[in-house]
Amino acid sequence: MIVVTGGTGHIGNVLVRDLLSSGEKVRALVPPFEDTTPIDGLRLERVEGDVRDVNSLMQAFRGSDVVYHLAGIVSISPGKADLLREVNVEGTRNVIRACLEVGVPRLVYTSSIHAIIEPPPGTVIDETLPFDPDSAIGDYARSKALATLEVLEGVERGLNAVVACPTGVIGPYDYAPSEMGQLMINVATRKLKAYIEGAYDFVDVRDVARGLVLAAEKGRRGESYILSGERITVHDLLSMLEEVTGARAPSLKVPPALARTIARFTPLYYRVRGTKPLFTAYSIHVLTSDCLTTCKKARRELGYSPRPPRESVRDAIQWFRDHGRL
View 1 (cartoon, rainbow, N blue to C red):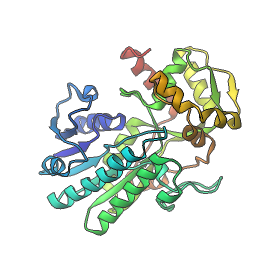
View 2: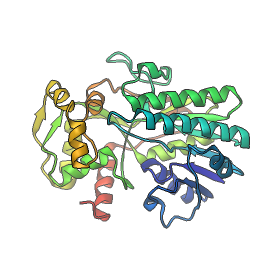
View 3: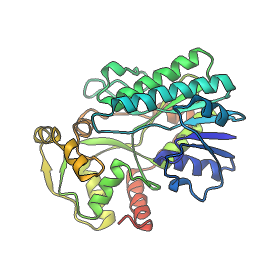
View 4: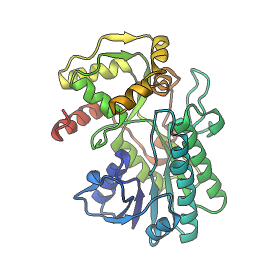
């Protein structure tokens, strides 16, 4: 039996599909307030629970062979530090405690590339760099770094765990949608009027899901693995979207300095509009920071092999079309 927390999320529901297609029996931990649309119709066992309730975790984890812990809050907006700590850090601490008490044979924790310390420009980010919450940029990155350290400390106490660090996830089955999914929709519907030049490493959600399975099967206890894809510029990403959707991508480029000034006021704008934030101080920092990452370790030890971003963009747009998002 395989248990997945966060199975209704973007990576989570794709992981569940991957596991089911391989013939695995899957049990999904679902909080009572969660929208279950991403996993509706899938042949899995659902159990009600919350990572903030350790007793519900112990009940869900009993009899499991592997626990994939993906449940967490993803936020690029300020003002959510308490919730991020409560769910991402304390929730992970509860998962570790439940795994140890129940005797779960294997835990795979989905961390983030942002949990790894950001090195000087031009330095390749790999698994030799530490997880450092004190140097993390933003509350989300800090919470993931703290949670990852909790997992590694759990290893010291006998936990058989491995950590995976995805980069920027894109691709189909993006029900929420994610920030990148919303950006794709905005381009396809001609709602994006300007862009900020920068670059980032984007990886297909299906490759991340497969990487998690490979980490469970082949990952070394206590090790972390970066699940990255390919570094592409915002301009090239918009060009791909223009080619795939037929919608003209914006040509107005906002200088980073001006973007940072405007971003001071965008949290209020998004709250008033009730829309998903795309343009924040954190997202600007990510796009303009060093994003040279490598997945050599995952390729070498796990057999991980990500696909090109053009395929991910094409399949994401097709999925949005098929599900009436365009």
